Image (tube, rainbow, N blue to C red; front, side, top):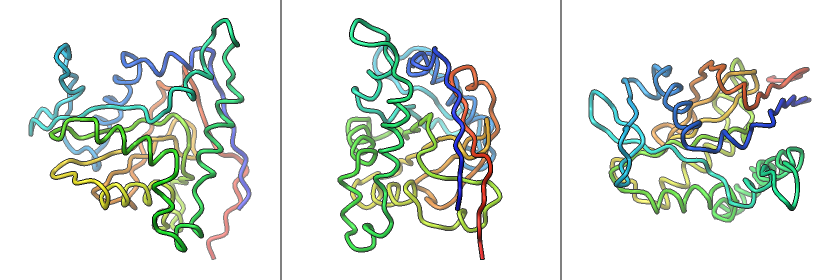
Length: 225
């Protein structure tokens, strides 16, 4: 498999990490979904007492949107006295995080996943959140390769399915569901995953994030024999 990733990043990328910017994006994608999020969802306007971010207008289920990042990862994007925004370093850091996943290591040591950065970040945020709230992680980086028309990748275990399965194994979720949204290989196309079925991927087209960043894979050569 030969891949060429193309990133286009705005100088305003850091603004995406502000709740007032990423929460409406997550909500829009949820409402565009027909399968992963089958109902209609609305913003909870008053969150002064720690209320959830969104609510299912039909069932009343609660949802919280979160960014699974460590503080130092976000600091790479700041513009301050120490440095200007270091976009290349941020991409390199995210690439290293994605490259931590090794399916061979997982087969030989099932507990290997608990030491990976992304799993650790997500687990801490889940445990801190209220037990009656579903969590929607939004990750503006293609942490796992997802090609819409690839039958092989649709059913293959990957970084996300392994993390979601481990979350179900390690954490008592009760009736909660954990979701993750991240960019696919196609520009302005996002992948929706959940602990309900970690292998299933729903693809949603959404162009408003392009003001902050875009990602696509070009010159893909995939053999599925």
